[in-house]
Structure formats: structure tokens, C-alpha cells
Image 1: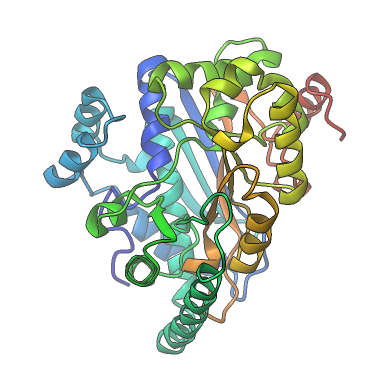
Image 2: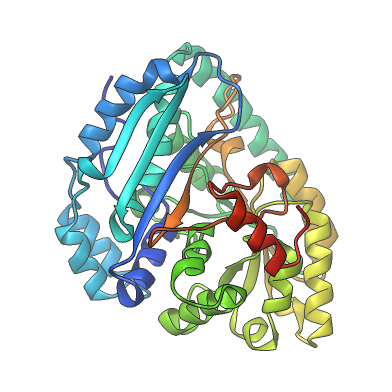
Length: 395
């Protein structure tokens, strides 16, 4: 099988923005990430362990190219010392283990946080593409193109409707669960050509660079989870994470993630100070309509003009869901939609629901308590129980 990953820019931009914050504040931190598959598998992933291992071997040979570093340095929020770090960077195979274990695919990355955190997106893209290799490629591509054409027709029909107060915009967020790199590229290229007024960017840095798009992203769950182990009082970790972000980016990248310990606990920490400093919020679990209403209620209670804020929805979306959410919220706030698997792996076969999450930082457990129960991932039940107690979350 040909290499799945050929560029170290072929990842999500928030990996670099989080990395930069850790570089400047916690450069000696350690971390542990573990792979999990939440869905059924047509063929057990253990049968692909050897090929996945070979792909990881290849990943560890790659370096950032001069033109890639030049592109990163041109993003106004990326600082020169991060580019210098990446110029020296190369994955080390000793920090990641890939094996079949008790009938399951086991992938564990453990080592310096600034190193192992970068494995996640690449590993997930590798697993997804290796898994896709069992299907009829030509038939899947034909089906994928038909479905993509139907989505573009939906978008054009929606675009022709009378405008609401705020425009409809969407972004592509599908690197980690794409069918193939080639198909991902075709989707991005096609959307940019066919619906440029609606399609506003991609989370994938390499594709943003090559197609002249805006790289979209700020922070992921791991950024906040790591702050559970950085020496702050546990009750204060969210505030510390947001404050560090504000100090690092000084007005750039102002979208906060809300579901690391549940929305209600987030809102208790997201006070007037943060509500004014951040441009908006991102939803990634739970009921999106309920989430949007609660966020607007919170802004109203703080007397913050919600019409100036962006609500970004990014949990398991397809276009009909985004149209309904747009109709509900577009006259009250700015809205945007991050669509992943439904764009990059909707080809008539079941896409894997796979993740690779941080479970330990600085030799301490860290957890996420999602607004969707199935998204909880923690390897220490005692710490999970303590976290629930501190943030008044039901078990």
C-alpha cells in the first residue's frame, strides 16, 4: 500500500495552535494518547495492525519542507519559535506502539506532550484509509461523487433562498475519518470551485495551503484536558486554559470549546470576562438546538450582544441538520458549521467512528465529560468520579 501520509502539514490547524501554547507555557509536559474505535468493523482492525504499523514507520521518516514552514510562518498567529521547533521536528517511533491486543487494535502514544500530541490526526487518517482499502475503490468513488453532487445541489438550492440576518457558512473538518487522502482532496477542491460563497475553509493545513483556503480551527478537547494536570486547582482548570489562550493569541483564534466537562459547567466558568474576549463558541456534543439556546440565554444574562458572536456547530453534521440550525439561530447570532465524515467519508460504506484521545498528562489521569455520554473517555474511574463531583455532573 502506498504511503497514506506524505506531508506533515496534512493535519488539522488546531494541532499547531495548541502546540504553540504548550511550547510557551508547558514545554516539559508529558502525555499519553490512546486509540479507540466506537463503531462496529466489517473486518476486525486487528487484521490491519501490521500495515498500520508500516504506515506509522513511514510517518516517522517525514520532515517539514521549507515551503510548508514558510506557509506556517505566514499565518499571523504562528510565532517564529514554533516554526523553528517544527523545522527540527521528526516523529520518533519509540513513542508510539501499534499492536493487536486481546482481539482489538491497540495504539498508544506516550512521551513528551509536544511530540506525541501530533500523532493523533495522522494515526486516525492512517487507520481510516487502511480500513477503506478492503472496499471496491472505483465503486466507492463513483458513489461518493454522486453523493457530493447531491449535496452541492442542496447547497445551491438553499443559497437561492432569501437571506437571513447572517450568512450561511460551512467548513470542512474531515481529516481524521476520511476515506482516502485523494478523496479528501477532491472534496475540498470541488467545494471550493462549486460553492465558494458558502464554503469558507478547511481544518486541514496542507489543503488550505494548496487550494488557497483559510485554515479553520482553534482548540480541541486535549488542550483543556491537559490543564487538569498542569498544577491548577481542578475546579479552575477551564478558566486557566482560557486565560492562557487569551494571553497567547491576544484576540486571534477566539473560539472556545464548551464540552470538556459539560455545557452547564462550562457556562459557570465562562463569565463576562471571557464572554467579551472570545468571538464565539463551538459545539461538539449533545443536542445542538438545546446547546444554542442555552448559549444565547447565557449571553443575554451577561448582557452581551449575541449578534456579534459566532456559534459553530461541529458534531456529526450533515447539510439538512445545518439548514435547520441555521434557520433557528441565524437571526440571533452568527453561525458556522464544521462538517467532517459526511463530506470526506460518505461513499456508500460505513465509516469508522474512531478517536485517539489524551488519557494522561504529567503522569496524571485526565478526562472529558461530554454532553454525549458515549464520548466519555477516561482510564481512571476514581478520577472521573472526582471530576464529576467537582463540576456537579451526573454519573
